[in-house]
Amino acid sequence: KQEVTQIPAALSVPEGENLVLNCSFTDSAIYNLQWFRQDPGKGLTSLLLIQSSQREQTSGRLNASLDKSSGRSTLYIAASQPGDSATYLCAVNNAGNMLTFGGGTRLMVKP
Amino acid sequence: DADVTQTPRNRITKTGKRIMLECSQTKGHDRMYWYRQDPGLGLRLIYYSFDVKDINKGEISDGYSVSRQAQAKFSLSLESAIPNQTALYFCATSDLRAGVETQYFGPGTRLLVL
Image (cartoon, rainbow over all chains, first blue to last red; front, side, top):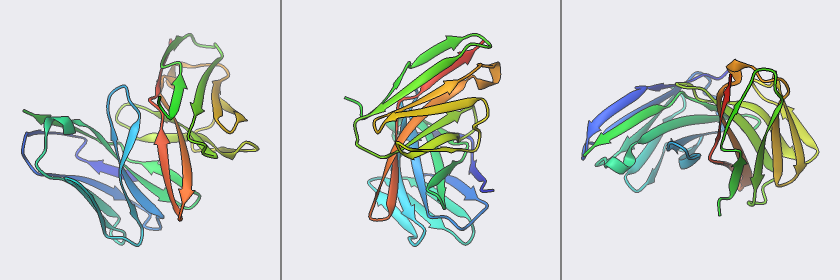
C-alpha cells in the first residue's frame, strides 16, 4: 500500500525566503506526482504535475522535482510572499488513476 | 461560476441521521470522486465513478454510499451518521488527456456529526 509523507507538517518563514517542501512515498511504481495548494474554505488547486518519466516541472516561482528511485519529491518556492500562505499537499498517482495524498505542509509566510 | 460545486458547504447533524452531500460539475468530465480529509491527514478516497454506470469503492467506503445520477452529478450518502465521520468532504472530477489525468476539486463540505 502506497504511503505518502510530507515534512515538515508546518513551516513559518519571513517574506522573501526561498523554501523547500518535502514529500516522500514508499512505492516507486507511480504514474505521476502532483503538488496541490489548499486554501481555507476552498478546494484544492493543482500547482504542478510531474510524470514518472520527468525529473522536474516549473511554474513561475515554483519548481517541483521528482526522484522516483528514492521515492522523493520536493517543491521549491522562490522569494516567498504572504500570498503563498496555504497548505501544500503532495499526491502520487498509482495504477488505476487514484491519488494517494500526504498529510500536507501548512505554510505561513510573514510580511 | 465554479466548475465543481458542492452542497451544502457546512452541515451539522446528529448521530444516526441519514444525510446526503451533493456534487455537480460543469466540466463535462466522466470521472468523479469523493474524498474525506481529517485534520493533519491527507485526503482519503471514499468512492469513485468513471462513468454513469460505473461505481467503485475507495480506501474507506464503509458507512458511505454513492449515487451517480448523471454525468454531472455524484452524491455521497451517510446512511447512519456517526461522530467519527466528522470531516471535510471533497468532490473531484478528472479527465484524461494525452495520458495525463488532472483532478479538479470542489470547495468542500464541512460536516459535523454530534
